[in-house]
Image (tube, rainbow, N blue to C red):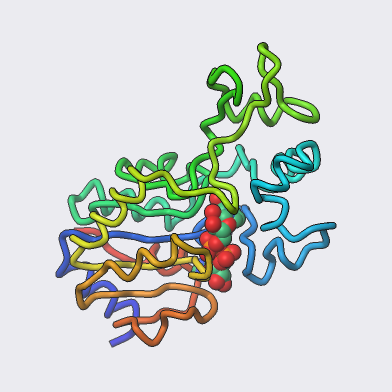
Length: 240
Ligand code: NAD
């Protein structure tokens, strides 16, 4: 049996699939990841991405933060790829109960997924730090320098920066979904960003699948490892 046939057979037997993913899910939509071959770590910046996207940096170098954020994190024209679409199809067919994502790009929802736990927030929610007024992602994109509310406060994206805690309700929902899953597909994540990566430990079943272009720290625990592209892999799955 090929690894795709094994994946198909596991999916056929499951009815509470959860997908746990990261930046690698969106590279085929043209959004760079951090640690992949074309990732932001290999591009030349004055600071590593995780320094720029930290709470301390946001508080001390706000203009530089927004330059990077607009340039690299806001990809509002990006479209869902085959992976996002297949996951939405599996949910619509009653096979998949939740997508848990570390991504902030909103592409799962754009593809039609409904139950999405966005562990690190979303570029599509932004609010004034002073009066709480909400703003769109387009407002941030079209602003210059530091995006500013009519009240004078900074408009901050609702994304979890390094050093900031995760939203408790999102975390609890994600843990519950994973703990109740009968199959967990982990894809496009280096599994190095905590606490998000630790959520995989809540899965107790015997259908743990890893799909990644490179190896991950969890490969030896998985029931099936597919070293390849997540979009190309999921595109081959039939939903019945
Ligand atoms: P990461 O960059 O650490 O790792 C991405 C992994 O995906 C790598 O192991 C890479 O080999 C693999 N990969 C890349 N393209 C792939 C493909 N087409 N098919 C299969 N595998 C592929 O990403 P991470 O683990 O999600 O951690 C990075 C952090 O950065 C996360 O917290 C995330 O919030 C954030 N981030 C988000 C976005 C986004 O929203 N699209 C983009 C960059 C970074």
